[in-house]
Image 1 (cartoon, rainbow, N blue to C red):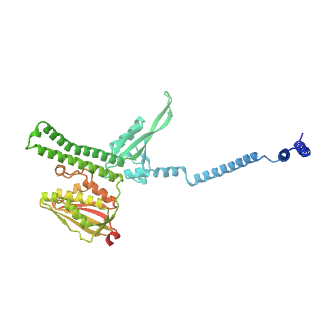
Image 2 (cartoon, one colour):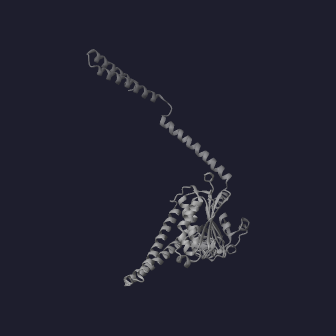
Length: 446
């Protein structure tokens, strides 16, 4: 039975049901339901009949064929693009570009330690050009470093992967993590079957200079902190034990012992404060809020706080800054820097010497200088004077109560302002420490 016949029967039945409902006064909802049923059946019949009469593919099949055609076209285009790319960029040039873009140095040698390939980083490391590499120089001609030579030899002779730390004896004293792997070729042996023979080795030089320096700084910092804390702790424990052994009843010395304990405890407190301050500055958690600062008034405040210490050593403090000078800086941090520099100038000055504070404008920079008349600093110490815990005369610095962190704090705070801290010194004539700050027109107008 065809679909058209079924749809006709459904339509006739629905109409008959509607007529009977109207004739015998059935409720209106029965008639409504019948008409809806009839309309739905007619629509369904038409759709089904139309679908059977179509000769073309169904929508699903059509979509699948369309997708297949698109995939085929895409594959053809991809193949054409790949072929075009291969024609434009040959494989050897692509490999060379990848190697030369590496920051790590890559050096390939043959079984006789002749260089057969090297990227730009390796050529820069060993100081030879592409022309030299084309002439196949030996590895021994490029470097005499025994660690490099033994690593490549071990990889070629034993067929092992070797990792070694290498320090280049150049001006920068760079350190590398060298990893060398053998280049093997499989050959068929008569007795043992497949065997690998080493045809050369490839080595990659990873620059770990910065990591090594940071590790060295960390170790030096821990060592210095331990040493600086051990000295006052030893003194405190020694005098406490002396008091416990009966010296507390010695009226002539007990107060002196207590004074020594108090002085060493204050030194430890100052050291810990400086360590925490420096750590916060280096971590970037200390923010500066620059504003106009009247420089002469601030220097007067600093000199007042250090007057008693200067009087003990007979050092004269001189403020040579004019009244109308303003600088753009964080007032609290600038006072901290000037206090550290003036305190050092007093400590390491000659008896009866002088400390002068001055100011000058140099282009777009404000330069605040602290000059002393001490012994000066030898040239070999100048480049390290701002390092943490670095002292030119360790014994004298500890005797004067220094922590070894004051200049490091000055350096970091100057940079936090966008400036710099420098030093100039002539042995026997004194030193001049300078704080350079960016100049602000608003401070000058004020």
